[in-house]
Length: 507
Image 1: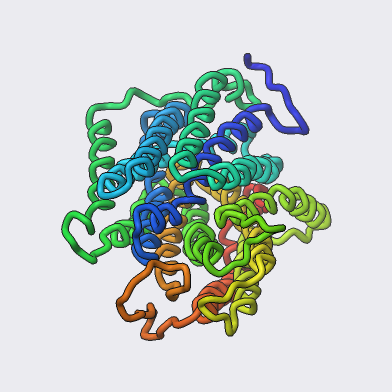
Image 2: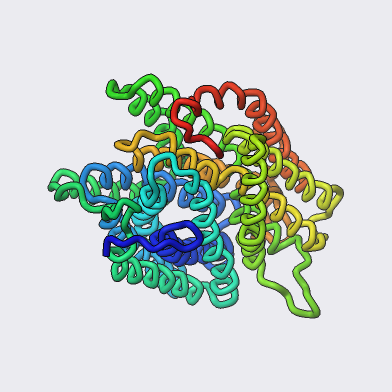
């Protein structure tokens, strides 16, 4: 069992984690592809309310890895955390199936239960499976970059099929299909974990650290209660106060303070952690714009995009398969490009790559802004404009997301690896909540909820957004400015990473 077989220079454990993550991502992205359409068409929520719920859900999904990372490092180990998380996520998708089957006020309550289970489950699953990819390799191994790119392709293979499957059927069956995907992921992991999760030194990885004590069991139960309460807060108290925003953005401020106050950190470790936090800040702007895919861009695809192909109207959720398909197609190309530049000592550092990513997401919105300029509320644009946006955004994603995961894996101190990965996902939490807030600014369109009330246009910083062109210009300005600042800071950040001290940085 200690013999490590390699395929294309990588341990088989990488492909096992690839398979496990692929089905988990099938579950997540299948649900996400139909989530905002389900809320607006079945639960009859307005665009702004549905966007805020979408942002709260996707934001909390990326916040709970902090709890999961902590409990993993101190008690559970990666393997047990993944099993707990997988079970809770399968349960959550089943609650969503019941919600869609029931509808009405009971459907809303079941949705809160489903979202709570999905959020907590993801907290246990997400940071731990990503961390285990890095643990399969010796420290500073050059193959880690390509391993994360391969792993990222597994994510996108699941994300490609799920909107096509879950979006092609009634909402309740779509959620049930997402549930079954999670069950496949969980069962395969339980059955084969002992066989494949072995490092190249022949050691089993991800084993439990010590038994979970009563105090931390109560922490888990309490966390479930708190998240269910926060999701229900507005409905329970008839309040407009968004406590989830305060919770997520507050954590984004508190966690760096807690981690950087650790007196055991060496000077080099401190610098590298500071780099992670600075880049995490810029990541918020990238994902805030990119994650419109599941929110405002899905509403745009549903209402103002011509989806007719030879007399057949393609479901709006199908557009969410464009990004993962482009990742699968382009990831090998980017791997070759980085390898080509590396051999010639021309490969840009992680900060520069991430700045390129921000610039590309801005370019994608330039394309769609051109398409909608002068567009009336009853008019529709060709689907090729939206396809173009998603392809350009994918190129930006390949410059940022797998590079970010690889960077955290290499720069974070080993004793804090899962916690730092969880902290990296905290930036995604803030970004996804931010994405929901931005999506709520989409102006009223022809397919929105029927109402006799006067049209109220959303506004930001005192400026009204009266049409889609103004809406998309918001993302161009936001990501364009962020990209320019990061380009300026990249050389300084590269020095802070102290690459020569370890010889680790090639990405």
